[in-house]
Image (cartoon, rainbow, N blue to C red; front, top):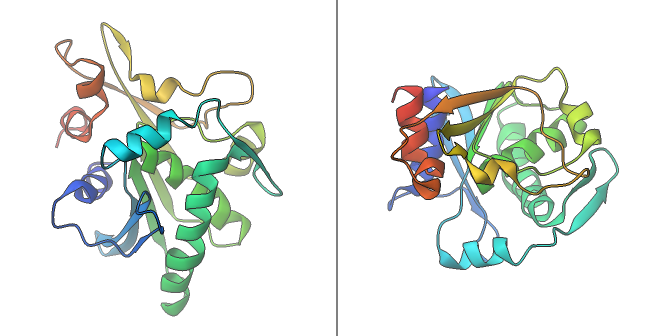
Length: 205
């Protein structure tokens, strides 16, 4: 858990060098290694522009994917690019050794979707760790991910759970199994509670 949280945190470094980003530079993938295993970290929201894009996505646009069912259309568009243009070429060139996925916030939701897409292609990651994700799909996605080594986190304190992990709401949106709840100090407000330093501290980093 901790090494993959640290890999997700590395996406926020000022000197991060991304292996892939979309044309609008609103989605990013960092290719690194964790304990000698190839790891793809999906970056979380980087700046105010991304927050605006995310907020304007309500009501949430839904895409019907043939394998994953109804999923978040915006995240799917980003993830399909990351999978097709970054992860698949990189791992195919290496002969498909085991690999990890991780991400924080929006990137965590993207990592969950990427796991589903890669499983549909016959190349599921060995492990996915999604730190504080929103929901990105429904019951079909949960069924596809059943039995996979996928863990997602939700920080909480006396004032409630990380609100990012509670949206979108409604019967369309399901959470995969594999939840790990992380206690954080009651002094953490909703923004602090969500950020990757709070996650790292709660895990023990």
